[in-house]
Amino acid sequence: MSLIFCVEDDGSIRDLVCYTLEKSGFEAQGFHDGAAFFHALEEGNIPDLLLLDIMLPGMDGNKILKKLRSDIHYKNLPVIMLTAKGTEYDKVTALDMGADDYVTKPFGMMELLSRIRAVLRRYEKTETDEGEYHCGKIVLKDAKREVSVGGKDVNLTYKEYELLKIMMQHPEIVFSRDQLLNAVWGFDYDGESRTLDVHIGTLRQKLGKEGSRIETVRGVGYRLREAV
Image 1: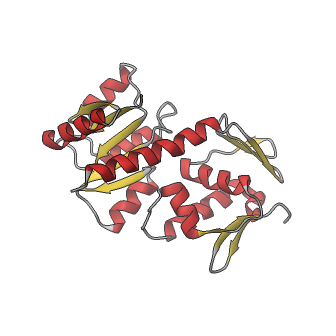
Image 2: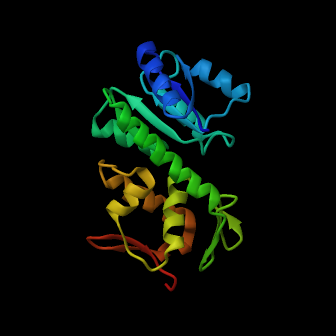
């Protein structure tokens, strides 16, 4: 049974979310601010997924997310943002900071449950895929979530890693921008595709000369070339 934490300062929303989650077969715990949430983590209570509001007293949701993604123990914790902010800029900001999905208030509980299950499925697939992939001098070891180039470790963000993994699993296959955005940012991501181009750019830089294997297919998307 998956354990889900909900950090939300509005008690009525928090109680409703936790009640619905428990009725839907999940375990749920609610917290009114970041301090209470981090106290629970320090006590050894690690959830399978976090629902995180942005507008919180004290440390806001974006700062909490940033702190999680910079901590080796929690950097891969699935996070769905819950917030009244609904502009494209806010969505892209949260997603680029490492959020797995973004739900704007007011939201329906059935939609929220669907998004939770979708994110959990993505992580379950990652955890059970223990493959090792090679392309040129690039080696990706999925069991350890490690990437190296010519024997030297390369430090990638979560989304850079997921982009590289998808392409290394299917070299020479052309992926459209929509396919990559939906696979890495969320099943119905509708933000600016420029965020994908930025991540591809930083991924190429981190891979050094091997980054030239990631080819831009004009008007379509990207592919990983086995031969350069």
